[in-house]
Amino acid sequence: MLDRTTPPPASTIDYPHFSWPEAYQLKEGIPLWVLNAGKQPMIKIELVCDAGSWYEPHNGVAYFTARMLQEGTQHKSAQDIASYVDQYGASLQVQVQPDTCSFILVTLSQYLDTMLALLTEVLLAPTFSEQRLAHLKHLIIQKLKVDAQKNSYVARKKFKEVLFGITHPYGRQLTETAIADITTTHLQQYYRDRLLAGCRLLVSGQVYERDLYTIQRYLQPLPVQAPVALPALWPTQGPIQVHCPKEGSLQAAIIMGKVLLTQDHPDYLPLLVVNELLGGYFGSRLMCNIREEKGYTYGIFSRIVPLQRASYLLIATEVIQTFAQVVCQEIEREIKTLQTILVQKEELEALRNHMHGTFLSEVNDPFSIMEKFKDVNIHGLEKDHYKQLDETIRRISSPQIMELANDYLSTDSLSQVTVG
Image 1 (cartoon, helix red, strand yellow):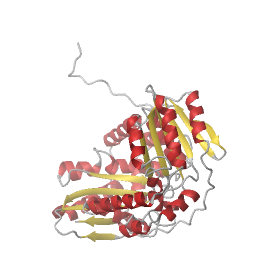
Image 2: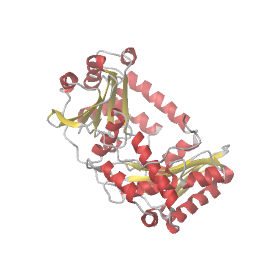
Image 3: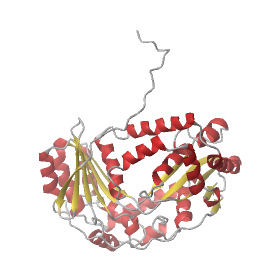
Image 4: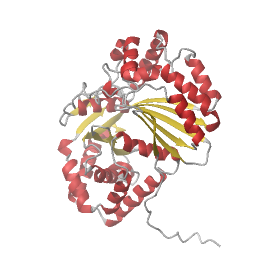
């Protein structure tokens, strides 16, 4: 009989060896990566293009160009497209990030032919209807008005402006004025010149040889758009403190952080461990102090946000306005503790176990493994990136954590935005 009073013995989590996508080529200039894995008859197809907001000539053009592809083709209306996707239990999404634009199709294998026909039509035969653009602009403006009532949204928006500047591609924000200035001419030109530039195709799930033939047959006509020269990297701004009062607000949203390294820097992976210790999980320093011990907030976290040309530290929480100043002081105190007191062995081992366990849960199906591959591929990293992360977690020492905290997390270098 099982003795439930005795816990099972703990064991070290070894690095998980998972399948890596195989390289093919759809046509010259368009790489195709395939991960054939999983037990469910499902396929995910993601077309990732170098067409994010970094490349747009006018604010919002990348976002609206991509979104408008689902607003009607030469043969189907927006409602037809949505109904078609629902009818076959599929999913068709568009994601526009600062660096990339992605078109994501998830479908049952038996409907691959049908859904690829739809995806091809959406990608190659958009109409950019004036009426649908006006409708979409109206929806987005209404959403911006709703979001503007949320302290956390306003704080994040202002924080990016503080870090990078309002003209920097990473600092620009979609505004009602920018939306009003967008025309179908802007969208048609961006679609023609940029939207599918530098594209790569990622396919994961139960992918058989016949499926590859089907994918190549439908997506072979994709145009190969030449890469566009990147603009020079704007200088980022120094530390700034901004308070945005909001009448009638009982809570304050607090964000602190700074611009950090690109992912290919040798200190990037060790910094991930330092950040996790500071505020990356439920047992982190910030959570234990500010939530568990003092009860100032329901949640607080720190995160390193990776972009192609930079990364940045983001420490965020929401508290009652009365506690805003003291919470900022506690955040700084926890950072200074990392800089002056060595992490104890027990806490460091718990952190290692958490990070290893989290990574293990993130590579347990073909779709999530492909996500890991995509991050590496987009940022131009090597195949052994995650093996290096695993080794970093295992080998990082308390003195190294202290040194990194002093090198990169000086409280004097942090910008701060408070809304409320």
